[in-house]
Length: 314
Image (cartoon, rainbow, N blue to C red; front, side, top):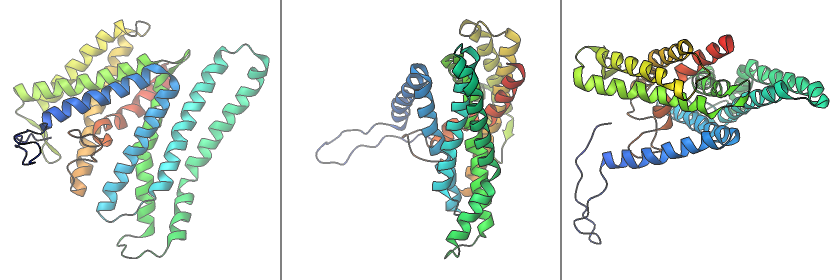
């Protein structure tokens, strides 16, 4: 975000008082947001789930709002409801699965597998029938006035939002759980890797950046910045041995490499989205920081790869 010089207030009640600068707002609200995030993931699995379920819905709403600016009318309320169900379903499945792994209760051993099947089949049925549900919604709302796009375009945009935002964010639950249950250290490690990628790219880009990475999408990004972000993320992957000593160095470096490669790609994808609809930020939920889609765009490309990696390698 570009910086603007602070201006002197003209409010007669506060003569000469200067409002908080953009940098000051970014720092203040960044610290508040980071504190809320860290407390939620540390306190319990349920506070983690509640926090990120809200984040996911807000990100989806921001995506749909941008699509509305160019004339589409996706089913935002229905999409948000489905988004919450997806996140809650994956969280509940992961939670019950870890309980079953350590349960010695005969009743739980007999009934929890059936519950897991119901949850898994329910989520599968929801996903497979999404097009039908969204088309029925368009049939109910037809005809629309002042609508340049066909109803099936609205269905496509609604589905794209769920695939682009909700499904990846729901996979955060896969990363958050191991065989012992919810482990806040995994989410903290992911945040540290993403932040390292951003900081390394910014510092290297400012100091050495000359060769544009994708000038038509994000003119400020350079290959030098990408390399700096990659190296600092790998260094953080090594340092995470102090936080997650049970993970091998090879595994940590592979995860760091995934974050260093797919995080910037996720950021570029969201930049392309904003340019395509002519907006600077996805939202204004935090002064100086834009929207939540701006803050968590890297997750949307990182999480599917990490979830697959964890399912394959543990």
